[in-house]
Amino acid sequence: MSLRQQNKLKARAAILDAATQLVSEGGVNQATTREIAKRAGISYQTLYNYFPNKGLIIQEILYEEWIRWTSMVDQTIKHYRSDLLGTLDELNRISLQFSTGANQDLWREIATMAFRKEVFRKDFINNNELSAKAAMAHERYHALLSMAQGMGQLKPGVDLHLLAHTLFCLADYAILRFFILPVDPDQYLNTLSEQTKMVVAPYLTDNQH
Image (cartoon, rainbow, N blue to C red; front, side):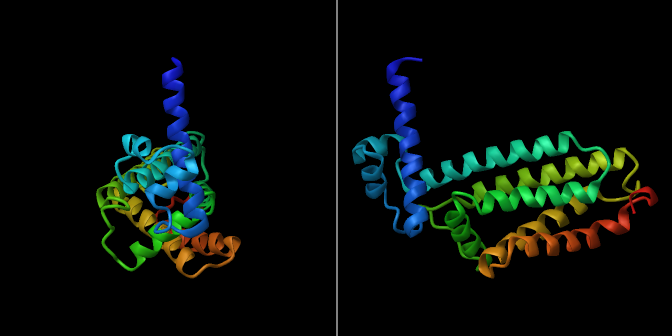
């Protein structure tokens, strides 16, 4: 890698780190592009060359988070053996871990806007981006349920797409409520576990009860 390429990677990383810090300190609205450039130690024009608007910076931060989330979820599903309810609980723990991590304030603002059914501003995040990520999550649930059914742990007649959609909506709504009405993380996970069990249990075969 050339020195120029290394410098470009460093500048990009500095922008994303600065944006994450500013969002954490004062929220998305306070993290202006000029403040981000100043915190990153670069000129405003340099920042503009990488990210023409703040929305693209936010999307990139969330994209990297989603890549990490996807990697952890895929590893969990890859090592699935027999405990469907336990694995679903693990997926919920992974999602909570990311939602309460370094970018917790950013996720909270997104959750608040989604809970209130607000239209996302163009300078914040594109609705199409969220739809794509929702589809990604749905695919993971469906993959897990397909494995469970293939192992004889789910009844043959179960509509896996519908069940995957239901589980995704349940977890998604739970995380929205977690940000709006914060509760202890253990309480959150226990409640979601019970709700997940109520949804899935009727479709489990006898050897999974």
